[in-house]
Length: 236
Image 1 (tube, helix red, strand yellow):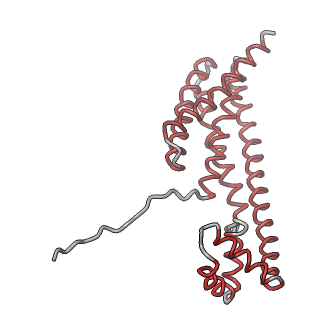
Image 2 (cartoon, rainbow, N blue to C red; image 1 turned 90 degrees about the horizontal axis):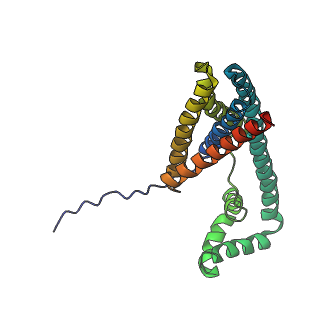
Image 3 (cartoon, helix red, strand yellow; image 1 turned 45 degrees about the vertical axis):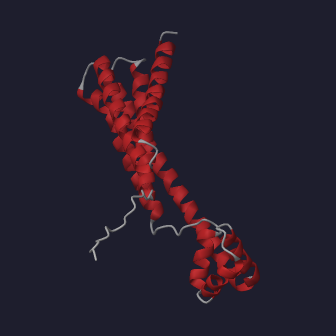
């Protein structure tokens, strides 16, 4: 008889948390919008100091706007969940037959017969809290929002936006020559966009290279369009 030691089974699945989503939202906009603004201004003015002032103003306004948007979205999700929770709690008591039929319909989607689903239904009916939670998850597709989710979302998005926005602006702070600052800003921002896109693609499973190329092309195209338009209007 052989002693076979079975290796523990583990599955590597990325759990796309809300915090990661907020970081992605903040960084992607933070890298792209100030980059396009700085490039556009560089096509119209030769003073790097003005680019820095305008860039900092945009980062401040953008981080506040993005953070507020994240806060309102998270608050809306929480309020929607609370309203649906109250409705589901009421229906479990006042419309038990309808709720039971909905349980059967949920299991039918997974090819589970009514006979096989009946013991599960009876177990859920004996535990109203679990019953409601099951219906919230599988009937409505809603997960209970984390406590203080709105405040954390706003702060995470705002900080990520500021961090991303400082990347294209940094060369204008360090170099007095606007043309040199623009070239350095383009170089480091494209590298940052590619790195960020690659990491994002690796995390969500869409492919690091594909995501890096897409993110870089989008950010580069926005900056090129802004720069070209500014040059065109400045010489009109």
